[in-house]
Length: 256
Image (tube, rainbow, N blue to C red; front, side, top):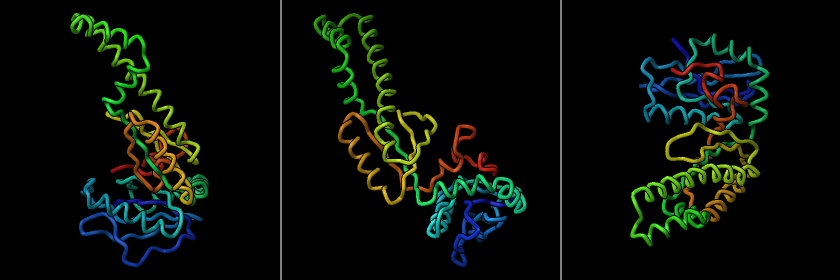
């Protein structure tokens, strides 16, 4: 049977409570595999595993329970190895890397910040900042709305100005929040968001990071910010651009 991997810890990590269960229906028993100075929190992998709410929560709960005893490198939901031997082989082959990551991420959590424009507010802002737009809009108004071509031109100019503003705001917000974080990881672009960035934050200074987010909200009323955290540091298991940050494949285990 294939092996489901929740996370990687130090071998010295405190044991999980007896009877801890994870994914599957019925929930499967969680166990620990060791290799050298490392350990992996695992269970058998259900044959029909899907991202259902129950299993997603089970995955998170196992990581939360393990995290109470110290640093855990969290794997993404659906990280599966062919068998237990494959897990211990990865721990052995990548021992130095995982130990470095455990040291680096100890005492730190992840906050994901997404930002989008408040449509009416950003339109007011780009008009206020662009004299050419204001002039064309005023000319159209005086002409009873302007010709079809003038309306099209104004619409295209406004759309371009808003798009440029998205890039400016994304860079600015990330720059304002970075001083309160130990590291950042830019997430994939997604429809509706101009910014999708995860920040690695020391747990004992999380209040400073949240205060920085609130200051951005106060000073950038044309933006809507969504903050998710504190989370296990999924986006920082694998540093650097070679693999998507925190991906199951990058960690050495495939996604089912």
